[in-house]
Length: 312
Length: 310
Image 1 (cartoon, each protein chain N blue to C red):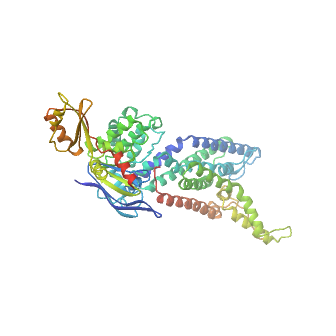
Image 2 (image 1 turned 30 degrees about the vertical axis):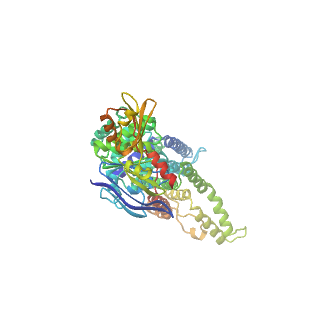
Image 3 (image 1 turned 120 degrees about the horizontal axis):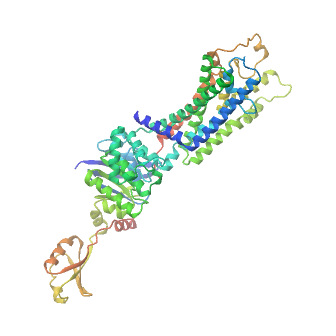
């Protein structure tokens, strides 16, 4: 598959060289570094230094008015993913390079695979470098060195971030195949992002209220049903999935999501979970995130293979 | 002669609309075949089917012994295709663009670099090979397109509207290169165009497409005779003295239709097909032809005549 490697390397170079990528990368790096810096300040002031898993809380803790690193990823991640993919196919189509490439002896899927892999690699390199920078800050400022357990958890968090952004990239690539104009595909991707990031909370609340109307006299069972329906609906948003995954991965004491009865909590000893137990807690969320990306990619793959490419 | 392209009863149906409807033609080795027709006649669709880029509804396509539908990669390996409005990566230089294409063709880099210089010399872009393609003119881009086609040393070159939108000088350069490819490198060329004059200049044979059908096929001469019938040419002659006596000296030449004296010269109308024989005969009898309008069949006329009849 020398063709795949060539396309991959070409796309990777293009991504890193493009101005729009540099712009968003700069924003993400600056906000990420600042948020973890303020988080480390807050940690120092509040004398949390004896807390376990201090290193991990740098990613999820907010301080000094700046939101957490996790928030920035869940907010800017989709934008980054969309920027990497929104004109993957239709951009080449308008410039006339797509028919040039397709007339070369390579399988058609090599192009879309190469583009997708290059986008993921771009994201991976970027997130990895930010996380390493944060680790550097934490070591310098707090003097804490992450232990093996923390490194493993940070790595899983890293994977979750990539999966999250990969979903948005594959969605954007899908639209870049379906729509002829890159402005249309960009706007559609952004519309979906805004919907899933902001409006899904309201809509989930409204639907849950419709199905299980609650009043002040409602039984706890009804309240629980209402809440679990709301959470289920919210999980359609990849941002919610990422938040849940990060909550469990970055905080070893998290073991349940959603409402619980007091009886269930009886006798519970709040010890940190082991890594594998934490993964088990959010395994469904992990699978859902992977599945969402795969579905998007599979649909774009099929759409692209069936599409007739004309130069005019 | 070996056939490079064979197409038989090709049909492409887009949900009931027949873009290509039973087209049959062939291209021999080293030949320049022109696919002519107005926009929307089905030329590009035919080309896409030749390359396996779209699936025929019915019919047989064979390129150098390969079925493009089943072995598109083999066909693309030996075929250079220059699409209409081809684009290059504007933020790369000509050399980098070609290097990327050679990588996709699986040509090792050290071989590729030598080849790139060679083809860029052929198309006359060697001096600007390190300039960004974004700074190129349309004519230069088209020549770069020809270079991208030549770099894989193809047996067949397919050019879709190769001269559309370029200035006359650029057009001339492109046409020269097309001739060169066919005559010197022995490449077969299939070119589609609606610019008749240019096609007429380079093509050995043409096929005229209209509404998905191949309506006429052959050399321009053949098609012309088919569509326009016999033509007459006009010759202007001088002689030592212009008189009726001189006129009578022209009696008995086969193919002369009319002769008369006008403005101190003799005007001869003759059958176009016998042009050479008549000129020879006239000179032998001591006349000096000063003007021979042996009008060739122009594709334009054929075209207009044909579509008016439709």
